[in-house]
Length: 234
Image (tube, rainbow, N blue to C red; front, side, top):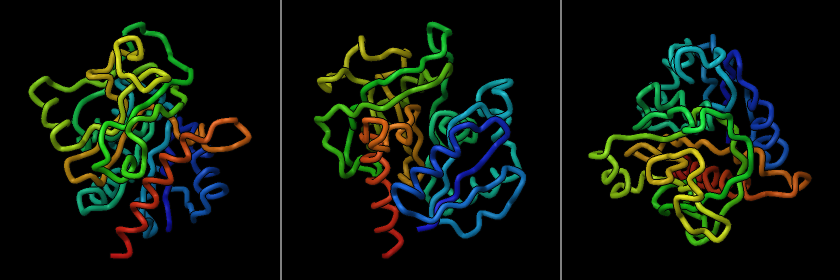
């Protein structure tokens, strides 16, 4: 499978993602510079974490207008698979490919630590092979990660299986104490209604190498890649 990782000015997690996808998960990976408009026939596009364009205005607000994003949006609208991590998630929300918005953490401090995630449903590729009763330890690194969506849209997210993960404690209990950034319903990631566009604030690529002592993130990525591969065979 061929995977494209988009690089914006200010991206700083692109090399981490490329390393995990190519060296650990053994897929072909190409860098997609933000000024280019050729997706190089990739099967999956990844928008990595970082501070695209310095996070001026709102995080992801300027990157949404990069030349490559017109092609990325068209790719997603045609059913192509797309994954946004942290800043990439913010870009997807700014682009209208995912519902909701990412707001400042209530503390207005940058959160950089390990947190726990619980899969909300198994109705999408990234959680399909995951244990819904397990807490996955994944790092976060963001200042604007508080997921918000209007109240009348929240029930729709749950009913459609669009909630990917919720922040929980080490025992997989979803509670207020685990909701360190104040996200609505502890939401840490969502997908679109068609389930081909995925966004999450935590960084699975930072928990995918045995040398780091944590491979929970690899499990998440493997689930997604396995599902994408299976869909390409059909």
